[in-house]
Amino acid sequence: MSNAVRLAVIALAVLAMVPGIAGAADVTVKLAPQNNSGESGTATLSDAGAGKTKVTVNVTGQPAGSQPMHIHKGTCASLDPKPAFPLPALTGGKAEATVNVALDQLQKEKYAINGHKSAQEVSVYVFCGEVPAK
View: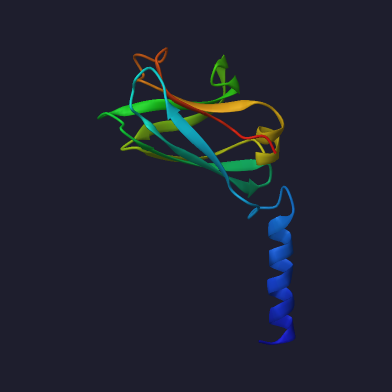
């Protein structure tokens, strides 16, 4: 391997460790069932750079149809009912989106990701997970 290639590899590795740079370590949010839904899974948060976060959700136990999801301020026990950041509806146990908030910001304050039973029954939460603090 040439010195130029070695330096490029080292530079990319260093950039991946800098907060706010795309490629920083992913954060996993464990989604636990609520209201006897039997739905659980994970949300993986990845720094997408430019103050954005990629959210990838995988849930098992979802019934047929789609379920609204959001990122809310607060904890699973005490959510602000107004969503802070919308997520696409969970369909087939999966969803992915990029939201306009830095991953660091989601970890500085209390935020939680929750899913609703359906668009008609948004007041019924079926899973929730808290974004871990940094």
